[in-house]
Image (cartoon, rainbow, N blue to C red):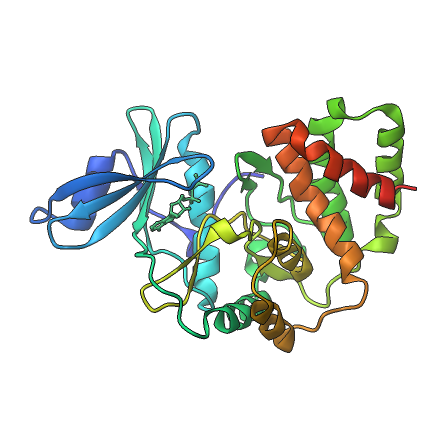
Length: 306
Ligand code: ADP
């Protein structure tokens, strides 16, 4: 992939943080305080308090290059462009003295509106129904560029068929990285699972733009009490893959699912497919964080690779 961006995903690149701040703030605004923000897995994050009473959110990373943040920014823009669900407004990305940075609107975490979960379910469904063909060239699934899932590289080479995409660009790259964890019988089971993938997964009736990493740490509550999505790993895929991820670490509110399924029908057999979709995330966690994730991975491989 050449990494070129579709026009409506273009984001401003700055050659220093100072430039980004000067351009955004102008001469009259100063930074009064810089406070660390905790909760992320990968990057250093900061709240910048400004003399005009506003705040900005800054992510920095000395180990990744700026392309890492460009991909995050493209994902936020793609979600924002649907107009269905809020994301922080972006200011720009770049690198400064060897540290990559991404600068955006600061979301002041607020109390949830009474209909927060209902609204979230409806908005995610609306995003999944939105048109997304601009991101996959002449194919149906994938994205204009590879990006990152947490700290791991995520392949988005476009493909015509969802099941081919999921096998070739989701499960296989993670399996190659994780091979050292498996004995020969587990590897055989994994092969059988991959051969059977067409019997387990289904093609969606329509490709959907996905957040791609939708767990509870990747949404916030905006000033209006409604959902704001952060930290995506977007691509165009089967909407069930986003819903599956929401259920991997405990699940969202029941109301969220009820309102999502009011709009997008729940297709029988989802529980099995959910395990396959989450196998991708569990393998990624195994590759990033190690052994703790081996047993849930093996359980799925053995169940479906018999
Ligand atoms: P990482 O890329 O390291 O996982 P996150 O994007 O998850 O970092 O951000 C770390 C934390 O910062 C989040 O858990 C959230 O609480 C907070 N955060 C993320 N984006 C914003 C934002 N735009 N405004 C305010 N806080 C944010």
